[in-house]
Image 1 (cartoon, rainbow, N blue to C red):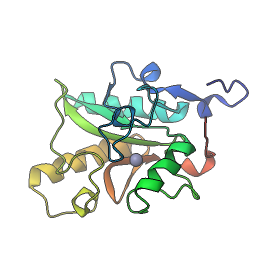
Image 2 (tube, rainbow, N blue to C red):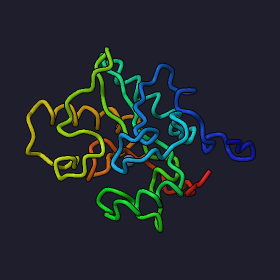
Image 3 (cartoon, rainbow, N blue to C red):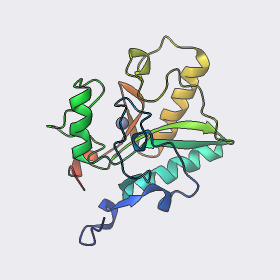
Amino acid sequence: MTFESQPRDTVLVPLNSVVPNLLTDVRYATKDNFTGRVLYTTDTLYARHVVAESLAVAQGYARERGLQLKVYDAYRPLSIQRLMWSIVPDERYVADPAKGSRHNRGCALDLTLCDSTGRELDMGTGYDEFTERAAATYMDLPETVLAHRQLLQKIMSDAGFDVLPSEWWHFDLRGWERFAILNE
Ligand SMILES: [Zn+2]
């Protein structure tokens, strides 16, 4: 991927080139995802440079609390969006490729919080669990789970991201509208 002619903050970069020692669990590079298929040929995650830099800020906030972030997904080519939509054509959980996902713009991150040893904090549901309990607005959950979700939202909000109401794990960089949909 080379985009030398583009402004620096819009270039797609590997997240781990900007955020050292970043934990990842790229389910779409395995069959362990809601499609049951391997969707990505690499488990390296990419995002716009400004998104990766903002993630580094969020990681700093997490580490101040003795925690760290773990990323499941970031940039997603439009062709993969079309494949996901063919399997789950439900806009609550998969963006319609006709409109494009913020993942297709390189501006969205799916992630959770882990302790210092890399163990995930309890968020009430797993990643990509397509239920109402996965909604960031769902409140009928144990106090500890609500506290973990609020902490993740606080860390990400302070770094410039807003949570997607229907998915506790999905965050969009504020200002994502200025970035185009890509299919690199
Ligand atoms: Zn997402």
